[in-house]
Image 1 (tube, one colour):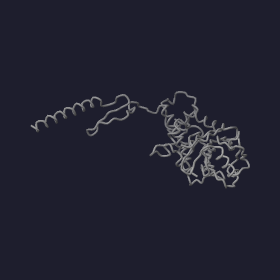
Image 2 (cartoon, rainbow, N blue to C red):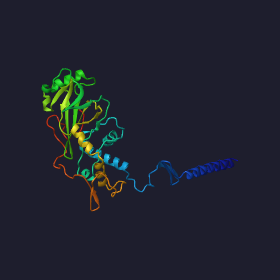
Image 3 (tube, rainbow, N blue to C red):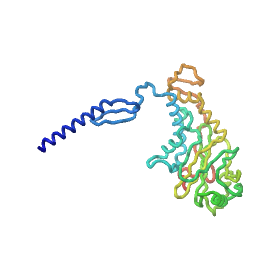
Length: 327
């Protein structure tokens, strides 16, 4: 009797499994943006690819590829000094992935040749994320003005101890031992040359602020002199490892350079350097592209190549080997 019951149960299970497999088989293949497939008896689901498209290199895809590539180039220039700067990243996310995620949509149209030569362009990118309040930076003439209140302090003749006392007294969340870091990206030809100025708040430090740069007060807010093709921003960090969100801002002349990399001509030249876009080469466009020997190239191939890509920047700069933003 028990054997008979067992046989009935097994027959019922077999029929149910067969019906399930039949239903899955009926859904094998692509359904909208999902693709079903079977491997070794198991059914899997994954995002469907555009395999029916013979040329996936649409202008939209090429745009994303070019923007992405320019961000990779810039991160390579900044990486050693940005370790641990992205505190809001997922647990197992790298600083590289956090930087790329934070700066989606930023970037310029850089040719493959420039990328291979190690060139990079300064951009108004996010360089840190964290729980501390942001030090907002704006460009005003030849100054980068921060949101740090100074009270009555005159920074031009002040010492680090004076600045420390003014920041702690007039800005909530700041304490002695905290660090103020200025990230300054200067464009020199086709190379981005970073400089990092860090000041640790110390009530006994008699070092003149002039050793770190030209500081002043703009409407009682801390400002640092900037000139030329620069992106700049400030980061607040403390000994507990916390950071502030920081997004760089570009000077007017630097923004002009960035804009020159975002024209239709720049896109045509950069996309041609990677092969082609979906647009036909013989169809007239605004851009001039030179093709030789089957390899595409365009734009100016010149630019400074004698620089190391790093600028010590005098007193107060972070040593290239230290690489962190903590005091």
